[in-house]
Length: 85
Length: 550
Figure 1: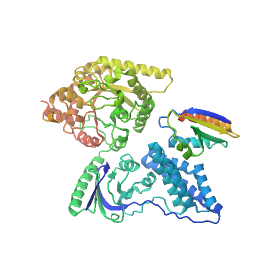
Figure 2: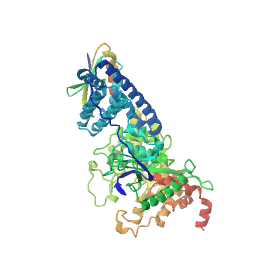
Figure 3: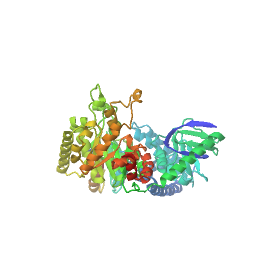
Figure 4: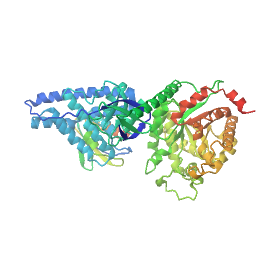
């Protein structure tokens, strides 16, 4: 399992559009990907759950990757976070 | 006759039959099923159909109302693919052995409640998206079309509120006007009405949505924000006359669209638009502005309760530059102070704010605020033809100081390897001091823009907010007109252009005079562009000059 922690810098936080793009990125992989804020973990392949976390600017999220292609998923998704959020 | 008041989002008059738009709110009944797999198969088909509809809507919206408004349909497609949402539907179907419609309705309710309970305003509004996709699914399951208004003749659409997908699906040729009970002037309906340039009202209080209204005659007076149901003959007659007059005027002006602003004897004028908010961009384009002559950047500051970040500003400037697609966009740096105050600037109380610490004076005493804005502006310049304009200048040394700071900003961006462009830089001439040294200022800058509101107030020593002085206030005072003439002359001597961005620029009784003075640019409210163009193309400047100057 791999893990990645990130503090959101986008002023709008994870709103609908980036959440949708994050889901798109996560769905490229078969491994289990979760996104968690303050101990509450959500499926990173489902937009409503991510939006439901209501992540705002300055808040920390932790992503976990678990499965066969976790290394590649970690690469792609962490890069997506850094570039877009 | 019944009369209702609403908030106008676009002016003009619409007269026609009222069509009350009812949501396709199907009564969903709970039905027991025999085979969950068959039911889920139906669900998958309905989902595929809904996604196909959304892709179509996305394309349609892209063509009609632009990418920013179309993005929502892409979002809805991703939402329909949500694993949790679909998982919940499947779970309900299998565990309760019920029909898919019921499972979708229940899931939709649960998910929209989750959003409705969130703290953030933005997230709360997303409950409407969940409802919208759930209704679309239910419609697809029952073989109906989602949110389709069955009008056959052009009608006034009356509704409680319209979801974005509903407004996009309406046949635009059959919509005379929108009147909604809910919605704000920034809602999708409002944006759409402005893009379509049809009269529309939102937040109409007491609006009836039943059969007592459906099919009746109605009048929407978008200019005054009034909706008449079942108007009497007298009102109808007056409004018809009004509408005819308006149509004639509009028709005439539309023939002016796409025409060059050139006088009979070949003198050209740049006709630009003044805007105070990014929302005004649509009307700028509709009225065929050659560019933006005054973008009042302070709205970005006034809308916030803290300093806007470089990134926030950059995104706004970039959007304007890109939307104007290569046309000049003159952005005035922050003009806070005097009558425009922002708490978080923590300005000291002043005896005389109009003569106090305002505009460029704040920027030069607090360069960190100024630099953030300049960085955003220089970066956005890489995406279009941005020009920066500095307000409240009184001396050459101020301009030199500004240029030094601008150079520092560029150097920093270069060192950090951040992409930026080279915007034109000009100053506003709005103090008598700047007028008197305009010959010295001209070689320092790329252009002049005369701010007649402040210039008049400072020249005549009259506070414009003080209505008791109205009798003394003469906007056509020869002192002001002579100053404008002098500024234009000094600009031309140095080979730069000079324009007017104050209210006087839109004064149609002065357009010929400005042409005679050699004014190169007028920046006016979007609605004034075409009427002024009409004057320009009908004017012979030489003839006017010889008649008025002997």
